Amino acid sequence: MSFLDTDDEIEKGTGASIDWIFDLEGEEGFRKRESSVLNDLAGMNSIVLSTGGGIILSDVNRDLLSARGTVFYLDTPIDVQLDRTSKDKDRPLLKNGDPGEILKNLHLARESLYKEVADYSVNTEGKSSQEVSSEIIKLVKNYG
View 1 (tube, rainbow, N blue to C red):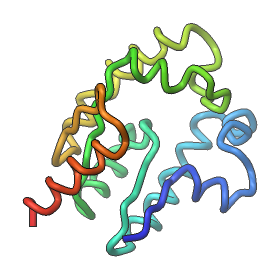
View 2 (view 1 turned 120 degrees about the horizontal axis):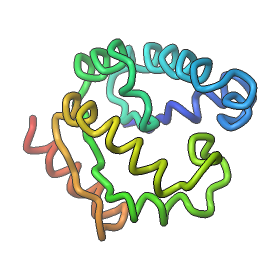
View 3 (view 1 turned 90 degrees about the vertical axis):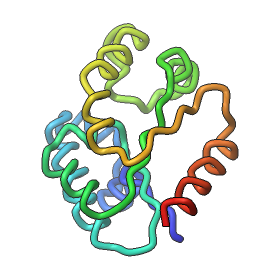
View 4 (view 1 turned 120 degrees about the vertical axis):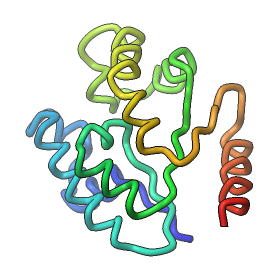
């Protein structure tokens, strides 16, 4: 299967970084682009699609994700998210304020939406990316 990432596709299509799009168009402009890319990619078959965490904020996006594929919610504790994003300067939502507090608030606002859409929830705490992907592969094989 091909692996695609909505953020990568937005950057390829615009020739601009996500950070720059946020600066120029704000979150609302970025979310419109994100929804458009998701709509295009959701029509493809046999792909693995990685999305940004905010993609589920839109009802239309949640419906599209649910209708077109098997959705995995990678459940990651806030402290792990904070550690993983601490050196990444291209996280527009984490720029203005305390990143730990921002991540907590995003989690509170989004967790129920993630669970609403997810077919499976995978806890990533203490697991390497290989361990998480192996767990997902097992779930997919058992799903079919």
